[in-house]
Length: 65
Image (tube, rainbow, N blue to C red; front, side, top):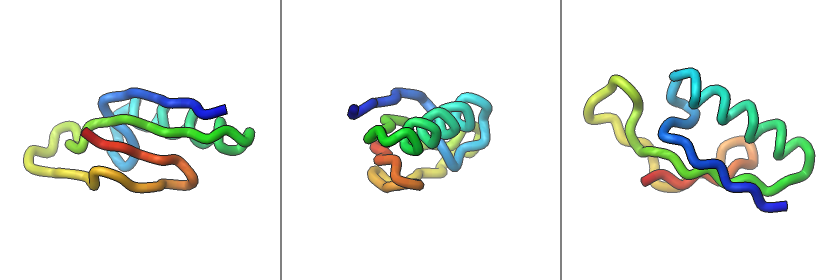
């Protein structure tokens, strides 16, 4: 199954919701699902920081807007 998670923050951001989303995505990938995440390019509390628009982290497709 292809599962899409939408969250403001995602790994490597260290806020709690980013870590929870990463843990959930990891678990779903381990169970054989295709996982895509849509998240912000910014890092909470760090002005000017910009993460890549697209990357794959541990088998998770990450799209940042």
